[in-house]
Structure formats: C-alpha cells, structure tokens
Length: 234
Image 1 (tube, rainbow, N blue to C red):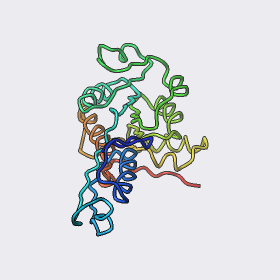
Image 2: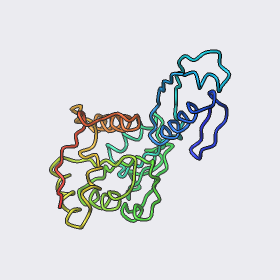
Image 3: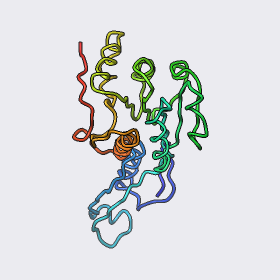
C-alpha cells in the first residue's frame, strides 16, 4: 500500500483498525525518514470483519520513500570540496555557497548548485527547506559567525559548524550576547562530525558525512558526536 504525505493512499493491507494504525505510522515514517516493522495480532473481531478464516499475526514493513536530501555546504574550501564529492555519492543534492569564484565553481563542484555571492547576503534571503542539511565550513571565524547568525534560529534537519571547541564557544558566546535563544544553539552540531580522530580535510569530510548519514537514519549520535560545547542559559 502506498501512503502519501497528504493522506492519499493506493492499495490496501486488509482494512480495519490495523490498516488505520499502519497508515498513521507510515505518515510518521515520512516525517522521521526511519523505516518501521509493525506487528499485529489478528483477533477474532478483525478476522470476521475482513473475511478471514482465522486470526494469526501480521507483520507490516513501512519503508519511507523520500526525495534526495539537500546538503548546503557554506564554504567552498578544502573540507567543503571533499564533503561535496563523497556526499553526492551517497545521494545528497549538493548546494555550495561561497564568495570566491576561484573556489566556488562548477569545475571544482561538478553537478552541484554553486552560488558565488557574499555568504550572509545570500543566507538572509535564501529559502532553505526545513528538510535540508546545512554545514558551515567557511574560511574564518567572522564568516562562520555571519553564517550562524543567519542559520541558528531556522528549523533545519541538521546544522553543523566546523571548528575547535574554543572557536565554537566564542561564536556561541557572541550569538548569545546578541540575543540568540540558547535552545537554538543546542540544536547545532558543533564541533561538527563524529569523533573518529579525523585530521586531514578529507578525513574531516568523512566524519561529517558519517554524522549526516546517522542523522538521516535516526541514529542516536550522542556517544559518538564531537558536540561538547557549553551553551549559556539565562
């Protein structure tokens, strides 16, 4: 049975209250992106209603089919370059934003949507869908701060910020002083990526992609995450 996000359906798994429950679980799976395996005991009332000779058990596999997720890479430097290559291979639609045409161009990022424009200017007017993954990997502290100022309060599937814990803490402190609510910063994955001992730009890109995949699959990354920065609260 196909279930659309707007509630339309095609086909059936037998009708009755069990199908209705599976329908709502399918709607939830479309939102979370996580597959489900549902188990139902078919009691006598269900069997009689649906013309079955006997009850038994029914297992329903719910597999969400979603469009390729969008990955916005803010910064076209070395880490962004390697991340775009490997993220495209696993199905992400790549968008790259940087103000340097030398770095942000289709020769370096074939197949990507490349934007050459001042980062804060573009971010403040960009309509980034809530289902998007956004990675801030710019070339400097001020550019990271500008990007986070435009992104931290947005509803996004994933927002990650590269940098040492000390640099991330300085950016958080600056945003907090500007009035950014602590709950907005609590959602940010920073320092970005999973803790795999990455050193080179290519290795850092792998750690970031691993975190993106884990988030997309609904995996709890708290034990593997590099996110250890204290967030000020009122």
